[in-house]
Length: 564
Ligand code: GLC
Image 1: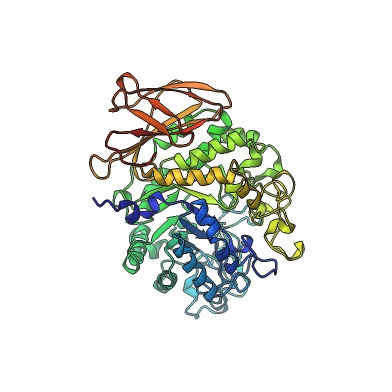
Image 2: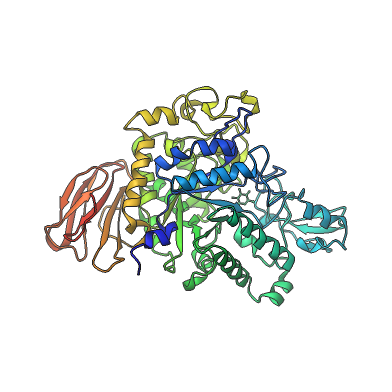
């Protein structure tokens, strides 16, 4: 094994930051964020400790789904910039040590995409087979639609085509027929194109829908036998073009199925996947102030190949889905964090950010984000989380959490100098608006949430055992406090081992755990507070924990040469 593993498997100790260029920073005063604006803010992100950007779709779009309905996969939305601006942005990011991944949305196109326009115009069009059609009226699929506010079937009749077409999302987003060799060729070309421009990989949208067999089952069976064969081929193609590129998949399915999307023990499909299951159980655990849902879930995670990785998150750009919880559990989370109907969406999720959910309690917020960085896996932040931004419930649906980034307390939160009516959507108001929550003020305050998040990112990077190592849950008898230990022994002898402690409740307590194989008299250093504790007999560690307290305890082995 190489000592350079943290660089070779860079995604396993990365800090990923998701943003939408449209709402990040407007450099030319037209009201819309742009690539040049983001390039000007790369130093800010580098200082925060971000190592990889995930750019939400920036392609030309009909904008039915905030960019997730693409009309040209090779283009750049002219409101956001040009290819030249993008190359400058990527180059600037690389110069500051940041990688860049981009959304790959190939389950569907926009219905305004030239492929769909051609496809519907004639049965003889070569593009007809790019989509999934049927003649017979469809069965009832109303309970399967993703956006129940707008759709009641997965199939829509197209007058011009004289057939029904498949769409898992909005009817303006017709599903591509991935079994078509022509479509497969297009997807490979798209991947190749962006890699050539210096992109480090993709956040792959809606993967289970992309390789589903609905409407094309016979063809899947004929061409591949198993749709996963296609994912393996796609990943292998990407790897041939660029060896250290990654695919971070959106795959909200139970662990057993996720494991298949990783490519099982071989890990030859998606490199990473968001852990939707754990995210939902985290909220349940926070609501109950009980670690059991976290422990039970994390122990169910499948054992992945060495290069595969889970991505952890507290917030993403969609509704905070709670679809994997039982009705009662979901209600518990709603009661605790989003009791009003307007805070909920589609009956299955929340359209709030974390700080307002916990009434801005700084201790609780810090504990939650400390846990995000401490969990086994790679943390993914959604822009604005680092300063504790809130949502704007006056903004429709999922977009409530996609308000402009809050840079200063000036007009439009310093996002843009344009008239507020020109902005993609209004800035958040009230207690979490720019008057109270903004980057500039927090940069001046050593005690700010921003500086705390910067410290967490630094500690996470200094503790590769968290992202790269194995973990165990340490048993003890305070159910409110999660204690886990991450260990990485990459070079044989140069052990890295940390004990991570998180109190989900506001009550102070004391914990007592046993650290296997750790000799009496060794010390642990708290990487957040600077305190030290000595290990007692039989590896015993005893420790007071504040309400919502957290500790990153590095075991100081005699042979450890790290800075602590
Ligand atoms: C994914 C995206 C979501 C989008 C949908 C359709 O779920 O996260 O924002 O609406 O795909 O592309």
